[in-house]
Amino acid sequence: MIRKARQNDLASLLVLENECFKEETFKKKQIKYLLQKAKSFVLVAEVNGNIIGSIIILMRKNIAHARIYSLNIHRKYRRKGIGGLLMDEAIRSLKEKGYTKVSLEVGIQNIAAQKLYNSRDFFEDKRLSKYYKNGDDAIHMIKIIKQGH
Image 1 (cartoon, rainbow, N blue to C red):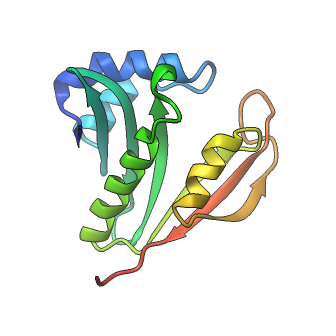
Image 2: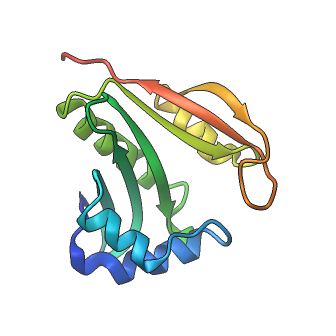
């Protein structure tokens, strides 16, 4: 089930964040801010009451361009379509809100994520040299969200 994250999901989101990322993790304070105050929305994938995936979308004020800040899927649930479901729901929500573009960054080594984004019509905009703390490069990707039917 995909749903909007709630305040009481904070602990589960923090565990998922630490499970999925080793270096570039959000801290509790950052996740709490994203849930409460930021111009953002967080969706979660839930199985049997457990959060097994999340997507964090940042929206810019007065600009129809959003940013996928984070997409996390628990290791046991990867390659089962959960990331695609979260992406599809996030893009549908952005379209409803009138957004026309969404961007993200993905590690140059993360081929599985790149394939997911390409399957959702994201395209490579540019390479970002030494983007991550460990010195790895990233790819900046964009999707144009078509308005209408």
